[in-house]
Amino acid sequence: SGGRIGSVYGVYDEGAGVDIRGRFLIDPDFVIRAMEVLTPEVGRNPDELLRQIKAFQHVRETGEVTPSAWTPGDTTLKPGPDLVGKVWEIWKP
Image 1 (tube, one colour):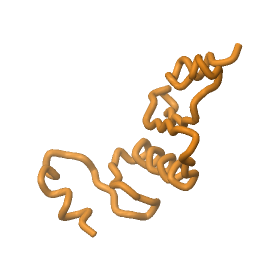
Image 2 (cartoon, rainbow, N blue to C red):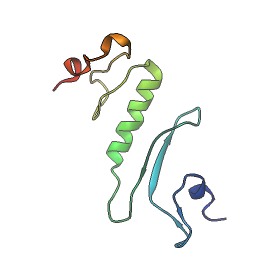
Image 3 (tube, one colour):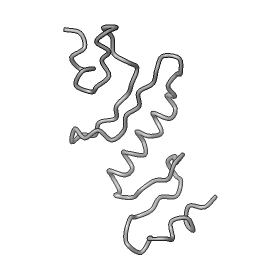
């Protein structure tokens, strides 16, 4: 029946009988890593969706972390206590 999946993710509008536009990135362990829900008047960005998928794949494969707007080949960091207060030195524009 309609709305089952949307209800699970909290995007089903019972009054209208439709799912609100949204996207969810779910990793192989079924953990939601990202979600975006927008009202109809603003479109979604497929390029940003693909960038986020690549970033989450990189993080999963390497254990490194990525800054905003990261794309494959950009600088990443291995998280650790030695980075506290120094991240900006590495990621500054």
